[in-house]
Image 1: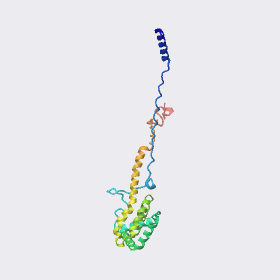
Image 2: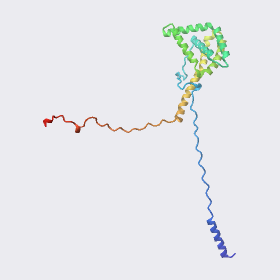
Image 3: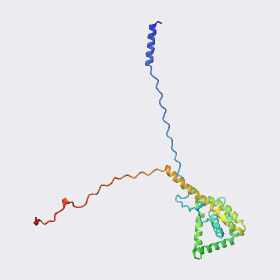
Image 4: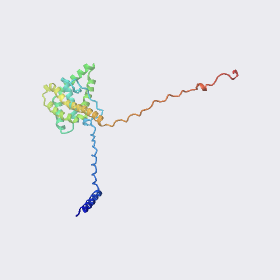
Length: 247
């Protein structure tokens, strides 16, 4: 192939290369999918308790103060007996049979202590209220019945009451009052645990509302109202009261 022919062929190849389509750049990758925001359910009160549950106050040591706090002597045994009575009436579960049996044995075996401690409580309440103590005893009994029957704490309360009923049932009569404060404190613990759980729920609910609750719509802004027009006749429209004949 001579030189001129090589030049022509090279030119043709260059022309073909120039006319060839340029490679198309690949499309950009799709944007990443949006991150899903998972909103956890709002905390709920423990034990299906009411949203408006009122908690008792706390002592200096941080513990809740209940009707059973720092109760000693005859009154401790009397209040313990009321708590076990509530349990024997209302607890229905695996512990029902043994709990009721133990409570009935307490009534049968320790009847004298039950009567004497109740008499002591009536005397004490009578001195505090300057009466015979019967009405204050009845009010306190009702208060304790309602306290021990709080539904959110019942499952733990019934289990604990069964344990304590077995202990009290087998305790020598002479040791009942001495051991009563400790038993009463243990019987009261399920309610303290419930109150602590409810206090934590309140904190968690406030934190959830601050993070996830919808914000209220801002109130519309109103402009300053224009001053009201004066009411009544103006100077230009004042009617003359001068008699016509005096012009």
